[in-house]
Image 1: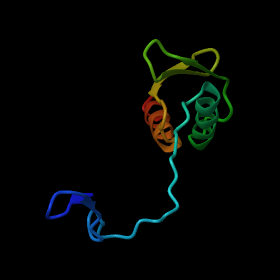
Image 2: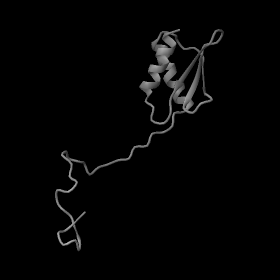
Image 3: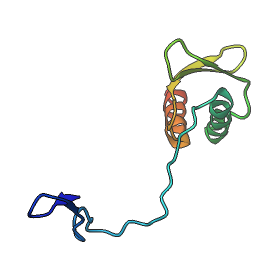
Image 4: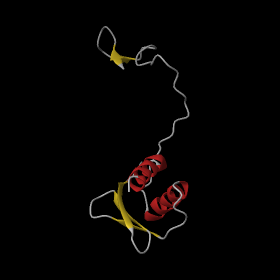
Length: 105
């Protein structure tokens, strides 16, 4: 609101704060859920299949730093991957990290 010329009362101007694009009256607040071990494991299994690793045993645990996950892949000679995944992290970002680390071995 902006004051009128006399300064005695506020006046709402029709073009005040109107954007150049239409805004829907249907707004939603989206909250990102935190990444959980089961989410990381599910994504890791899919990526490993895509890489041709089959279905090796996978162990997922939270690392010592926040939003970091340790993924141990395999049995006799396991590969250990460390990825970042917290609230709002997409499955695609997790997938890329696993793909890059595992493919680079």
